[in-house]
Length: 368
Image (cartoon, rainbow, N blue to C red):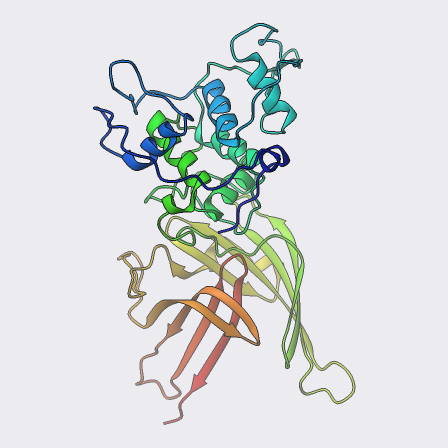
């Protein structure tokens, strides 16, 4: 896992810290190793009665203070902020300014007056946490994810995707991220420990990855075809619309062969990835969109859903797969097995890659 840290942190020699000794808080039953680790580093502190109070909320100011300690940044006292609710001499004023200078925070804007304010004692939310941790450690996004409560135009989507890419926060089992949920001290300790040391990162960072194409134009090439994918935008239901122009170049002697155009619609829900493909943009409607494969799949690749008839279809995920000389991770293969009483039975497979959608398909016919 690759992490990126600020220039200030590099100058101060930020490195991986040793695992801490047991701080033995009387009320800690979860994330004990992470809490002890940060406590021994003086990033977080317990209370005089020997408790840590992991269920207490973390304020925005407390989060800034802990991040600066993790970065080993000491405010120099020469500060000036333009937040209307934070004045020179106030508790936390220097830390807030240091965080602004490092690009960690930017504050809030009053919709009526246009004034910038920081709201230091408001509880920190999960979406705000994603932003400040991403900014503090200059993390780079690696994958797009699908959480049911983070739309494509949510202000924190890129930050959430970045944290998930690095295994810092990967969402809940119901495929939600809960961006407005307030963060407790125990959870923030978990995120901070994962940020500082890879040894605390667990699980599969690809678990909630999105199989919708990244909404940018791109070209797909192999020996037989050249495909140009043009993103047309989002429909009202949040689905993506694409124009795909495919040119058959294998059969042409000195020029491109036949060219065809199809239109694809991708939609992600808690049930899975849906896709339709037609020769007309007008035909891309809700009535003809089909389930490509369900979310989630069991470890053996089978579906846990009973709402859809998959009696003739099998699914599985490959860790890596090479298609047309391109290497992909976590490819989902959906293979349709027909009723062999048909006069011309066939087997067809479709291949879906994270952040790309449909990347290949094949059919096999068996004459009787």
